[in-house]
Structure formats: C-alpha cells, structure tokens
Amino acid sequence: MSSSTAPSAWLVRTVLAVFGGYALSAALVTGLAGLLAALGMAPGEAVVLTAMLGFLLYLVILLMAFTVAGTGRLWLALGLLPLLAWGVILVSGP
Amino acid sequence: MSAATRQAMAWLHTWAGVILGGLLLAIFWMGTLSVFDREIDRWMMPETRLASPPSPVSLDAIWPDIEQATQGASQWRLRLPTEREPVLRIDRVDPEGQRQRVDLNPATGQRLADPGTLAGTGFIFPFHYSLHLRWMNLGYWLVGLAGMAMMALLVSGVIIHRKLFKEFFTFRPWKKSQRRVLDLHNLTGVLGLPFHFLIAFTGLVIFINIYFPQAPRLAFAEHDTPRQAFFADAYGQFQRDAGGELGHTGGIDRLLDDARERWQGGEPYYLRLGNPGDAEAFVEVRRSFADHITMNLDQLYYDAASGDLLARFQASPVMTVQRFLSGLHFIQFDHWSLRWLYFLGGLSGCAMIATGFLFWLEARRKRHARQGRSGVRVVEGLTVGGVSGLVIATLAFFIANRLLPAGAELGGADRAALEVWVFYLVWLLALGHGGWRGNGAWRGQCWLIAALAPMAALLNGLTTGDYLWRTLARGPAAVAGMDLMLLATGAVAVAIARRLPRAGAAAKANANG
Image (cartoon, rainbow over all chains, first blue to last red; front, side, top):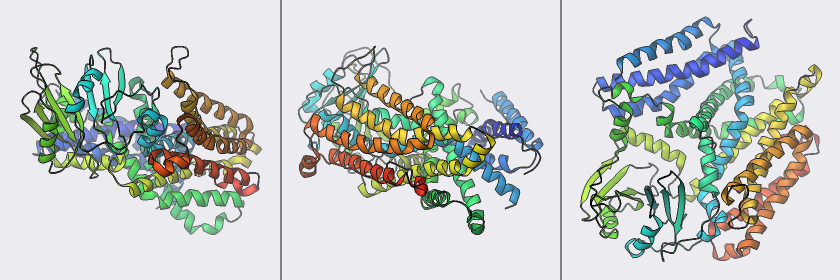
C-alpha cells in the first residue's frame, strides 16, 4: 500500500467519495436532464432517464474514488467540482 | 487491473462489508420476508383468513359499508380483494393525519375486527425500505447508502475474487473453517450475482424521487416549482377542485366494467374517490399489476355521478422502464415459482452477508487477540445479534402476535406498537448476549431459534384452530406455508446448532435456512 494509508487518509477519502461523489452524481443527473430536455427530449422522460443512470454513475465514481492514487485529484473532482456544478445549477434554475 | 487497484478494492470490500454489513443484512432479511408479506399478514391477522373472493366483486352491493368505513377521512383509497389478500382493504387518513387500516369482508361488507397488528405489510415491509426511521427520511437515506454499498461490494468482490481464484494455492495454509466459510460466501455471491446486483439497483431505482430530488430543477426550469411540474408530467394525478355543492355517487361497478374494457381484460386493483360527497367528485381506478412485471401507470378518472370518463393517464416510455425495473423488485405479479426463487435468492443474499462477517471474524481473531484489539469482540457481538438475533427478534414478533390479548395496551402503546416493542427489545437482548458471550453465543441462540420457531407454529394452531394438518387439508395455503416455513426454520436451526461445537462448524451461520 502507498504511504497515505493512515486511517485518517482513508477516512478523508471515504467522506469525499460518499458525500462528494453523491453531490457530483446528483449534479450530473440534474445537468444531463436539463441538457436532454434542451435537445428536445420530453423533460419528464429526461429526468427519469438520468436519475436511473445516476445510481450507476455514482457507483463508478465511488469505485474510482477508492482506486485513484493520492488525494489531490480527489479534492478537485469530489470537492471543488460538485460545489462549482451546484453553484451553476442553483444560479441558472428558477 | 493493477495490484494497487486490487488492493484498494479489497480494502473497500472489507470495510464497506464490516461497517454496513449489519444494516445490509437487516434490509435483506426483511426484504426476503416481504416476498411473502401478504401471506404473513394472513398468519398474523386471523380475521382476514377469508375464502377467495367472488369474482368480480360488486362494490355497489357493499357501498353503504364502504361509506361508513371511510366517513370522516380526509383521504382514503381501497384495494379490491385478490387471492393473496382476500379482504377489501381500506387505507384512510384522518384530518389530523392519523392513518388507519380498515378491512371489509368483500362478500358481505362486514367490517372485520381491528387486527391490532402491523403484520407483514405494515411492519416487515416498511422496515425493509425505510427502517421505520422517519425523521428527515433518515431511514430511506441509510437504505440508499446500503444499496449503493451493496453494488460496490459486489463489484469489488468480483474484482478481488478473480485474483483469489488465480492465487488459490496461497490460501491453503488457512484453517478448514475459514476456507469453508469463504467458499460459502463466494458461492452465494457468485451464484446469486445477477440477482443481488439487480435487486440493489432496482431497489434504488424505485426511489429516484427521494434520492435525486433536484433532478427536475433544470429540465423544468420554466416552472416556479420544477419538482411539482415533474410529478404532474411523469405521474399524472388528475385534479379537480371541489365545487362545494353536494353530489351523489352513481354506480361504481359499471365504472369497473368500463375500466376492464379499456384495459382489454386488465383488472382494477385500486379505487379512490376524489372530492367525496361533492358534485365534483371523481373516481380514480388503477390497473392491477398481477399479470405483468411492469407496475403500470394506466389510471382512469371518472365523474362519480355520471360515470363519464374524464381522463386517462398512461406512463411514457422511459417512465415505463422505471416502472418495469420497479416491478422487478416489488414482484407484485402472480407467479408462484418466480416468487419462491426470489425468496431463495434473498436467503442466499443473507447467507452471503453473514458468511462475509464470519470470514472476517475468523481471519482477524488471532491477530486482534495478539494485538489486544477489541475490534473482533465488537463485530462478533454485533454479528451474533445481527444474524441469529435478528431471526430471534422476528420469531418473538410472531409469538407476541399470537400471545398478546386483543386491545392490549401498556404505557400508551397499543397492541400493534407493543408487538414492535417486543421485536426491538428482543433484538437488543440478543445483541447484548452476543457482546457478552462472543463466539459462544451462536450455539445458544441457534437452540433458541430451534425452540421458538415451532412454538410460533403451535401457537397459531392453539389460538386460531388452524393447525397445520387442517390448513394443509383445507387451506388457507398462506397459513400452511407460514407454519411450514417456521418448522423448516426450526429444523435448520437444530442442524446448525448440533454442528456448532465442532471446530469447523461455524461455517453455515445462516440460521434461517
């Protein structure tokens, strides 16, 4: 195992993966639904489609979060990115 | 697949398993029982052991009884009797928000006595998806986390298993018991892999609205309330304001016949009166799920007085996919062999989770004892409580159902609540026993299961007269099935308990068979 195997490092990784990963998945679900609706898909259909896929997306994010080496990229992808994404969504929503 | 990746997957699999395995097992156990929740209802509510309903049921003939049963309710809905649930079931909500279930005999309209129990559909099934933790939907979120963890556990399990298979010879020095437990864990995992994964995924899909509540935010951005706009779009829900004038309800049976015609033979299962007593009253009829997997959304709305069709809502294609996936999980369709397969799949899932715990305990026991760590002790106590303790608590729930007198009350808790108290208290006791005795608790709890399970079956006979030899001869089949499963549980518990003192016998820890 690499040097960052202290329990605290794994705890940070777990929190980022579970909560940051969920925030990122939810942002992608909302964003993709909006995109598909803008491209002409019936909006109700788009929401249901992306929401169903959202669980599989979250699964992939979870697994990747635990395999990527080092925590730098993790903080960007699962900390900063979801914050930015949700900021954009909240601003462009009603 | 690099070694680092496989190691990470092994770490993830181990820790997700140890931390969330107990929760997963409880969800899987309750889910497995929920496959037969309506049969458990028949066993726990003897007044509902009616003969199969006349078909089709005439609602007009008993409409006065229905009106009486729904008087004063702010909302109500009724479910037409089926083979699995031979009563006319009314669920009503009072203006104060109190929920109540009222059952009528569909042939005579007679109101059945208050069952005084939540039974399978009221306790076991909701435990499965919400853990009865309603505060801020905490239960739903925990179940959702467990569902995601299950999928991650399965994928990571496959990834590390493939390596394990290649490195088979490395694991030979392990004790026999560890090898056997691991074998069973891998067997139930691999054989049931499509089932376990689909069950976890479809379970999550059912609750897209809880787990992705913000999903409609951009797609429905032009509405003030995107979420409500989404519900109206995707789920229908005809609405019409009450006019304030009194109205009457014309015949209902003709509406049901019209519905059958429009559904080309499909049967109604659900009926609701909107704006009851008003001139703007309407009847909503929903189509039964019994003859296909998809939990269809094909709702018909009729004017209550004239019987004219006001609206019909049918789900769109993608929504139908979501309803199909939900249907794969809910199994509301009539197919007994498939239902039993789901039950066996659920049991194999319970075995998979339990053997995972046992494997971890065996693998860590020596190391923790050497290092003076208490992790194994804690997990051991929780495992005993979570596996055999869960079964014991369930049996105590059934036994309390047979022993508590009607109208029983204690400290403000009604009979149904008392049964639930028994479940949780016995579970707590089993956890405590496991924490105190550790590995030695298994045997005692197995013997307890072996005693309690047939006792429950006997109590059914003693308190209702429906002894197993009678129900096997003349039914109801649901009650006979439940008694048989109880006896089978007892038999399996005896078989396991007798093997436990021997060194390798902690392998088959799934005490419910």
